[in-house]
Amino acid sequence: MKRSLEIPSEEDWGDYKNDLDQKYAYKMFFGKNLAEARLLFQGAVIERTEELRFMPVIPFQYYIGAYYQYLTSLAVLNNRNASDTASCFLRLVESKLSDDPDSISPLMKELMSAIEYLAKNQTLFGADVDIYGDFNEILSEIKRLAQM
Image (cartoon, rainbow, N blue to C red; front, side):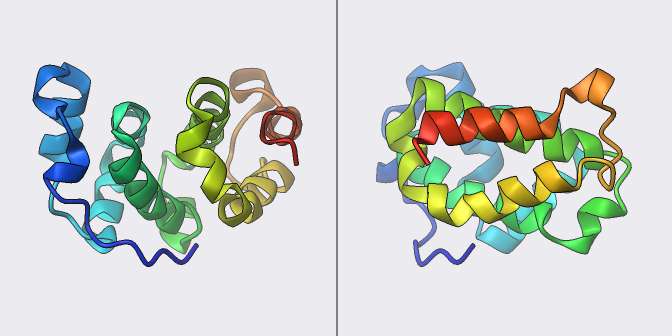
């Protein structure tokens, strides 16, 4: 996923100070470039995913690029949290399409290759269907929500 966006400014974060979730996301991500933000996902992917979920649109659209970079790197497969990384990404995309489609719809063509890769390689990520659900079913729901 190639993004030409610049690091989100203070103005892009809007009124983050009045929302605890956005305030924490700002604390973790503000001022970081994609390479720096990508490192944040290695240690705590579940927490970072939740922070993305609550970000204002511009920071979300920028920092999901860091998640995408991490997800599609070899580092993710060497991480004990590969299954959580894959599942959290799919669930984030699914929930954004359902709850805030304007924030993610413009990115769906770029994100779809990673989404399809995850659906085809659930076992590679060690994501047990009984725990994480069937990634192919999540893919179908994402396509339905994205009208793809």
